[in-house]
Length: 193
Image (cartoon, rainbow, N blue to C red; front, side):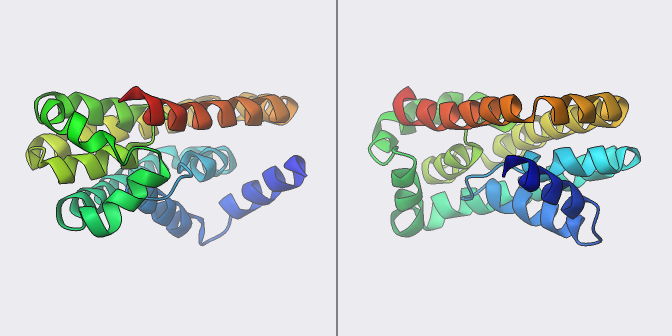
């Protein structure tokens, strides 16, 4: 089944609607969606390595715009929408604990979440809810998201065929590792604060 899902994703990555899908997933992932855009970015770059820069830019722009939505959810809709999303990630009671600290050090937290598998949307919502300086939020989001997506896309664009062969050979192991990192990120969110 994993092989069929991989093959389907690779074929989707080569369709004419793939970039729109990548933009959409990158946008919603930054504010509420639990699946990272790397799931589409990786096979899309492997399918068309020459487009690595364009695909990284799509991910970066959409992700930062989505981060603005997360910030707005935190700022304007925290009780209605933001609190339930944070509850989904097990962080509904962490807000008061973190708010004061976050306004001092939150930029570093956003940068960390923007680069790593840590669920970025949690910190975009926290940023709006605590009133983190919007300029700082924007700058670290651009830097972090660009660093993450451009590095991944460049590596795949540069070494795509050997990486594709490696992925196909170790697909089950890589999927397990990806899931461990994803679940570990959620676990970290739940117990970090």
